[in-house]
Length: 79
Image (cartoon, rainbow, N blue to C red; front, side, top):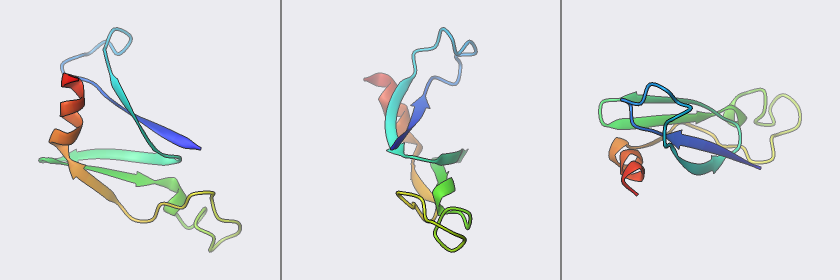
């Protein structure tokens, strides 16, 4: 299983007409946030519900918060 994350220009207000770039991520990505020059992504599979402590574990448990430089995403828009 996989998830997808889409990046588009923040000035694009009509997402139906936007030209987003997509990249794969592990499945069950749940939230993404930008703070300063960093992007933060968390995964539902790392929660108590799916990490195996409360029943069967998800197929691919992704623990913890993942971060990247914002530039690494905005560069996708130039490709």
